Length: 168
Image (cartoon, rainbow, N blue to C red; front, side):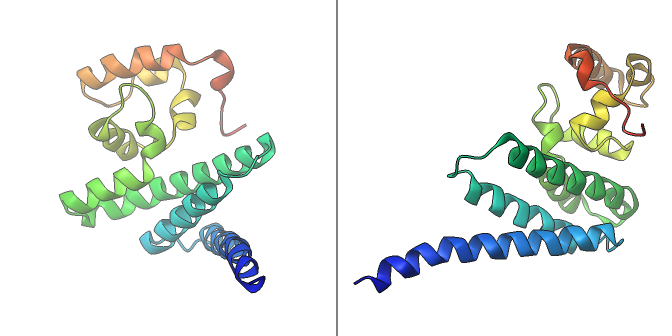
């Protein structure tokens, strides 16, 4: 009877370890330049699995911040991959890719799949990329007027501290 609880309590720890190892392996592969759709998808899935598993735990802000930075890194890497590989995507593949990797952009009010696709195509992969732009840079984006009409006020709503240069 005592063996059953032990097996059930071991399983989450084993899954946690597996998720951490998979995430470490795939992020390391991305850092080493192995930029493939398979690695990106595995990295995102392991990130999501780990986040979901940790959601039941009381997490400190440093853990949540680390998970957010990992997701941003994966999204940025996916954006770079998208810029070169999207020419080979059919419409369904492109839609699936953007749904997977542009989801941070999709969390912003006024940004839907079409706008996320447009932003990805011009090199903006995360909200942080978007808010790092100056208002002048946003106004000069090579996007349809209707898209800019939604993005300019959205960008202006960001607190000044959210606007930072990722290159500094």
